[in-house]
Amino acid sequence: MDSLKIETVEYQDYMVMINQIRTKVFQEEQGVAAELEFDGLDPSATHFLAYINGQAIATARIREIDGDTIKIERLAVLPDYRKQGIGKHLMRSALSTITQRGKSLAIVHAQAYIAQLYQQLGFEIVGEQFNEAGIPHVKMIKMTKQL
Image (tube, rainbow, N blue to C red; front, side, top):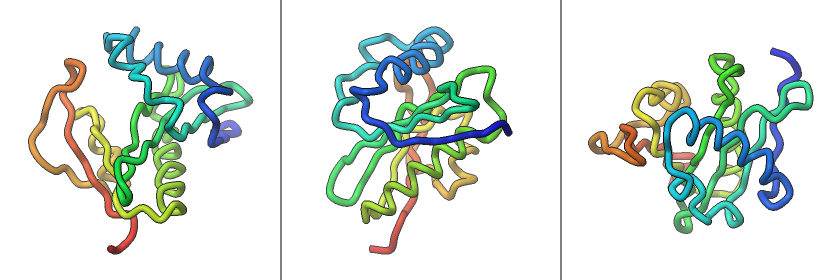
């Protein structure tokens, strides 16, 4: 893979790049309404941007839910860069940050079709499939440290 680089970034400084990726993936491709995608929680989240040869091509964010739990959200990879392991690299960066912060549980609401990616990273499905923004999802969890 050409020079993949993943950075932890501040939303305010990189929101144009982050929003372009998420708009392309979630709104244009998947039909998610802008008010659902841009929920006002970005400024308080930690964001990750993936670059290849200096071009931003993927993003994700994490948010603290409570003292021990962080939710990984908004994982988006531009179409031309899929099936190259970039999503997995982003997830590993997010999980590393969660572990460094001493949190014990990571949660994702995974689109059902991509749940296998998260299972490869040690996540387990909990509960039944549900719809979020009109798309089938499953809740998945991973213990990041022993309680």
